[in-house]
Length: 514
Image (cartoon, rainbow, N blue to C red; front, side):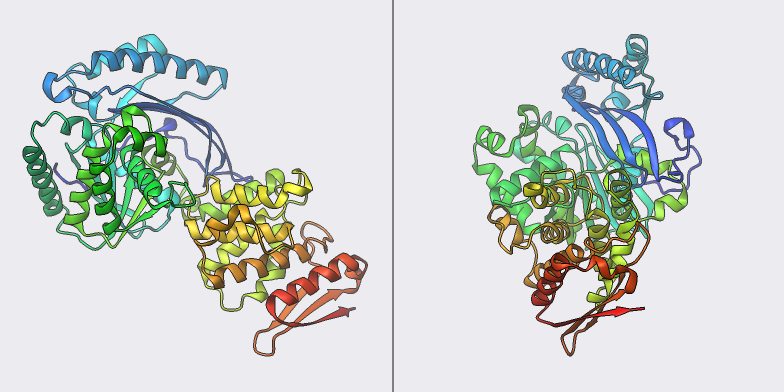
């Protein structure tokens, strides 16, 4: 469990060391990654925006390669058979997709097993996939970089749990510092007999980790790994949480303790059915929640966040050009969507400049949400008009978007809902509206109605039709249009302006300038 910092020169550079720069269009080629873990084997293909890639393909097979490893010292024989079959399939899929050479790696089980290297050689012979065995500290570093993919400049502690190990890495100012690996994976823990012996082992290892991490407490904690996501799913079900998006789901230390009690008392089969978990995953949950409970008790984080991004995403971040790393993943994803799907790519920036005066007190976090909504305002135009509002809301609240909290998803979704609908009620989404404050809901309506007006005033993708002027003290709203844009201001645009003024409680005027 020796700690290492981000100073070594012997890093592994995935994707053949090719730098992901994004290019003029900010896109990346399709890249395939195979992750051979202690519990599952997964194949992911990334595509789309270079800074915020989407999952073109994502498949996993629960193989439990690490089951019994502590006792036998070798990989689970049945797991080897299942893993090899899965890798044959993944290799065939990669050929069918015409992907560049796959980046493939193996973690704790293959790393520790006596027959781990023999298994890698068999995989290479049978499938052509070359598996790289990653050291524990490197696994921790790449997992932390996966967190940075979604949260640039993050700080805190990243905890990645696999089947046979648990890694920790410290983040400060967007840089990975000290990292550790430990034997706290649930497949290993279930080899320990007796509840008292298990609890003592977990507490002893956790205390040593805390000492090696220099006694850090009170930081933000990022949770990476399938067992943590399973616990988050159970917590969502327990709380009847309305938005079942795991990425950026927040827990408190109290909720962790309550969920541990819930898991201890409930029937695992019932939990599995309600939370939609696999049998293989749910059997490890009672062990994983004990580890998480100890982690929270010892490290005392002030904030706990689930990250859907981990080691695979960390590999992408590893190869990104520095300027791409520093860009906002949310805005870059929205720009990509606008270029790909909007009728007038580029108009989102014009629309942002048009609506921005309505929010004079917006900080940088609010500004980026306003910009994101403007970039996405027209990407669902192909949907039937009766369903555009719903489609926009569903896309934003459930899309693969980094750097977006759950309440921020709902805010942007609400703004787009009002972009396409004048109605204030949407019964289907009422449960989600509780994730935003009354003020946020009002601001989302104002933004949506302002975008609804601006969409009527297109002169061109990069051509501003005029401007909005807002006096928040006198509650006066004025639309100033250039003379050439006057023909665009017809009955429908006038009605939309009045609806915007009504939402703001404002008097309204229109001025045409030569």
